Length: 362
Image (cartoon, rainbow, N blue to C red; front, side):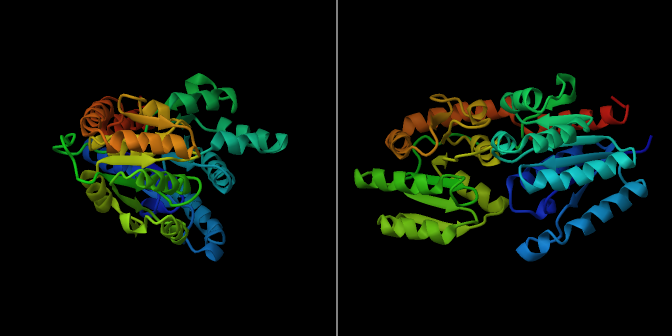
C-alpha cells in the first residue's frame, strides 16, 4: 500500500522563526522516524519574510500548491491557520485542496483567535465559520480552544480533534537542586507588547529595587531595541542579555542553564516555549490566558498571574528567586506533567491516526 502523502501548509516553512515552525519540525521528525506509512512534506505560503514582497509571493505559493495537488503529490492537506491575514490566505488553500478532492485538516494556531473573531463583522464571522466548516477535521490545542471551535465557529464535536502541541523529551532532564547564584531567568519569544516583555522588564526592575539578585536572558527577535532602552532607563541593562532570535540549540542551552522560565504574554494559544521549559524540568511563570492554565498548574508546576499586572509578576518572580527548593519541586512536577500530556510521541501518533482516518485507513 502506498504511503499517505501529507502536505503541511504553514507561513514560512519549517525555516520560519516562530512556534508553528518549531512544532511542525518536531512533528515531522517523529512521524518520519516512527510512522513509515506516512510521507510528510511542507509548503510555505510566503516565499520571503520581506514586508514588501511577502504578500506578493502568496499567489506563487498558491499556484505551486495547486500544481502539487494536480500531480497527485497531496493526499491530505494539513493547513495551519492563525488570526488576521493567515485566515484569509488559508481560505484560498482550503478552496484549492477541496477543488482537487483532497481532505483538509485545519490546525488552529496563533494567539487571540477568539478576540480576532469577536472583532469581525457579522459577515466576516460567517466567512470564518464557513472556512472551518469545510475542513474534515479541525485540530484545537486544548479544551479551551476546542470549546471555542465548537461554540463560536459551530463545528460539530466529532469534527474536532483536540491534540496538544508536543515537543521532544530531553535525555537526563532533572530539576535543579540549588541552581545558579544569582538565579537565571529566561524569556523566549518575540520581544514586544503581545508577549508582555514591557511588563517583565518593569517587574524585574521592581525586584531589583528590593535588593534581590538575578540575571536574565530575553531571547527572541522583534522589538529588541525598545526592550534594551527600557532596561537601560530602569537601570537593569547590565543584568539582562538580549541575544536576538534563538534557534533550537540555543533554546536548549538557555533553558538548561536557566532556573526560571517566564512568559507574561497578553495573548497566547498554547505556547511551545512553556512546553520546552517543562521538558527540562524548569518552573514556569506565565499568565492566565488561552490554554496556558491547561499547561501550567498554578502553585504546582509554576505560578500564574494576570496579564499586564507588574506587581503580581514581581511577586511571582520574588517567590521563585528566593526559594530554590520550591523551584526544584515545581520543575519536577512540570517534567512529570510534560511526559504525561505534551510529548511529541503522543502528538505525532494522534496526527498519524488523523491522517490515516482522513483517507479511509483509520
